[in-house]
Image 1 (cartoon, one colour):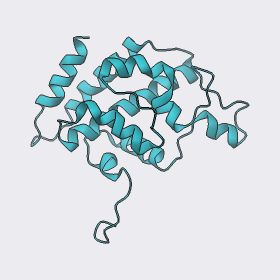
Image 2 (cartoon, helix red, strand yellow; image 1 turned 60 degrees about the horizontal axis):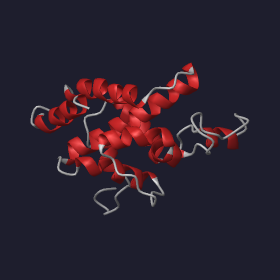
Image 3 (tube, helix red, strand yellow; image 1 turned 90 degrees about the vertical axis):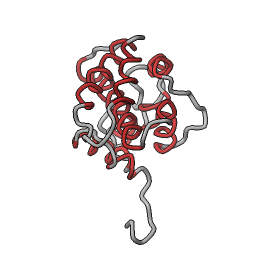
Image 4 (cartoon, helix red, strand yellow; image 1 turned 120 degrees about the vertical axis):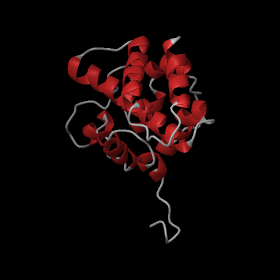
Length: 172
């Protein structure tokens, strides 16, 4: 695919990072539109309603990862801007990457996947355990996973940008 000049959308985000393999597979599923959102499950007759477990909106991919009101305090704390023009997963990734623009693509892609993964995990905590995580608890999840993922960083890469970002999060 690369030699033909064809580039797949978000392929660099998907594979050029140091996230665990299960997170890469999760993102691969998301970028192909197969994430099991409530809207998708409703369309297939598995759920009686497509509503988000946190609000009254339909839970599609964009709502799940970017538009849900529960994410706004978390995004504000992380410095993620809220754009109204977000219309696909590529736009979501670009918005989530905004606070990390100064970092290398390896770190930037990893942090985007980290935020998507934690959003997914916090959503599943509500769906399967009926526990609504506060913004502070969600940020704590980002910190704990970020600390673990920091040790996955290749030796040739500088740890300083990620360590600095995690330290700034701890100070919130």
